[in-house]
Length: 303
Image 1 (cartoon, rainbow, N blue to C red):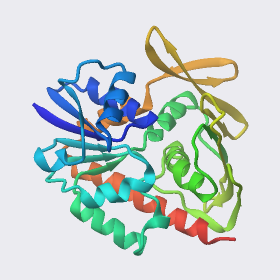
Image 2: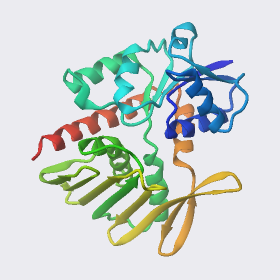
Image 3: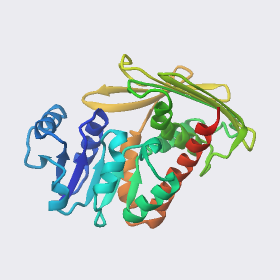
């Protein structure tokens, strides 16, 4: 029997719970919250009535039991607290993006990341948009020279100003990297233009190989569903989601045609478990995280 901990009861945590519950292993899932009542409500709302295998718990359980996997899906500003408290004991640490908010870390961010990764050898940050880009590349297989890319994402999040950038940039960055089949985006810093508003963030830049990149994020509680659009050269694509016969379905719409694509979060988790003993897999994910924080630091410094 494998013990799995899910820390947090947010909307995205319910997605994580669905995927963890579907894993083909014998398991008990401990839902960790400051309030057992809140944990029970979360489990019930997620559609699970039996508390024998999905168990409301408090943070102390992490010291009482050995865990195969610890999934951190709490508020971003609390991620560093959990990373500091957890003694992973060789557990897989799976954490919702972004890894942390750099503005509340007192030390140099690269030094802090070094300590986090030294303590947690099997740390994986969730970057499911790698798989969205893989699906888009299959659809755009004849579009080889991608000279310009735009990425527009509207969500019902509650972040403001630079925090919107921290929250959503992991999606845009990993998507663009995979779309271009590159491990890193090399930015021409002299080309960067950014505009920060209370509920939105705009960013434009050129890569060193002369590609034009445009990114726009907006968060508003009034949005009922996320809106995600891409433009590659002159080709406009939009990701849509729907529930059909109780199943969550992802689609990419292009030129009035809809392509059903695999659920990127399912793909990411499945890929993780296929590479559970692969050291290169952990190092690759770690490199994305370091590159992201380097990019965030560079862009934040610009006026």
